[in-house]
Image (cartoon, rainbow, N blue to C red; front, side, top):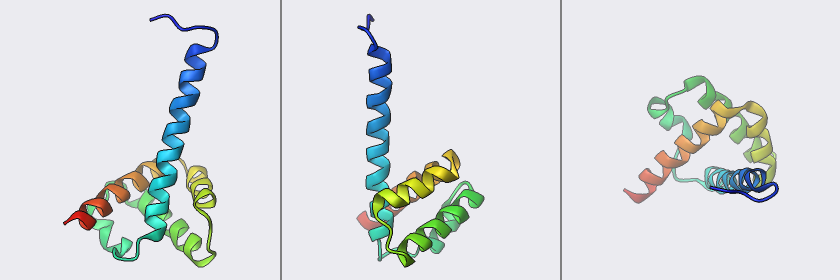
Length: 99
């Protein structure tokens, strides 16, 4: 497959933008969720350490009324494991909401 000038770079940037947008939506769901106690999800989470970090930043975001963008920034600083755990939590919460 041939890509024009900067084609792969543009594709990578677009993919990153889409992933970032998906993370923003997931993080909003986490912050807005009032029906699921996140601590109750802990046994279902793969990376307990990352979950503890995520829980701390979500609690801080809730207490300080962070925007979704601010929460996304805080989670990004914590690294890939915490971002992956946020996706895992959102997936579990979605299953709970649909059941």
